[in-house]
Amino acid sequence: MDRPFRFAAVIREAVSAGDWAEKARRLEDSGFDVLLVPGHLTGPRFAPVAAMTAAACATGRLRVGTLVPADGLRHPAVLAREAATVDLLSEGRLELGLGTGWTATDYASAGLVFEPPGVRVDRLAEAVAVLKGLWGDGPFTFHGEHYRITELDRSPRPWSRPHPRLLLGGGPHLLGLAAREADVVDLGTRVRADGTGPDGPDGTDGGRAAFLARIDVVRRAAGDRYDRIELGTGVQQVGVRGRGESWGAAGSFRRDGTPRVLLGTRHDIADTLRHWRDTHDVSYFVLHHERDLDAFTPVVQELAGR
Image (cartoon, rainbow, N blue to C red; front, side):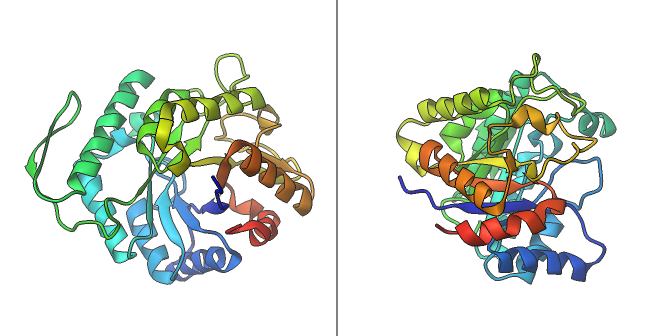
């Protein structure tokens, strides 16, 4: 299947409403497709719903979304209405990202239990069912292990039908669910609960072999719907190797050989992305750091929509 490139950027905050609107318009004018707001409770970042709405109002084409709030931090019945409102006000430009959560400090700071990965994946699966059910027509009932909904009829309905685009992102525990339910599968890595490396218990989870294995898992789990899925990943380094973020999961050298680290000239990077799209079906690239916008924007302008 011919998958066109799509590009997103994570924008965390701004100094004013005007500054936030200007950042959104810069992305739109530069060829980016999506502005994504992080969902962590801790650290310097805007609250997603208000930030997404403001960005959508400041632009005419740019899509808005989240990358990726933990399901356990917000009840899906509440999130369903918030997401539907953003999708309606943006006239169908929402891409809702969800994950299982990986930062223990988010949970500890809110007095919540940080449960094992399997429990968090099961809870996210129920949350997705609740979201899609509440975005449908008529009252919805769901009785699961983690969530119980009884004859809830929510308004507004989302602009997008049957529902807004759903992005599921995270490590290997999540891939089966994402392959079955998501429109965009974000290929992440395993990290420690404190957000530090290494990637997985032996430090190899962030490498090329592990990345390719994730694609294969998604392909097999998705079955007939594979061609309707966008495969995406986060870009952590652009141009020249820089220092790792203090909150980052691991040094970028652990991701060499994957599209998460894009070193070289503009033309080198464009060729690398073409290879990953044409050979491995990865077409949705998320720039994680605003510091890399100047280096990455020419690549976006060359490849966007192609």
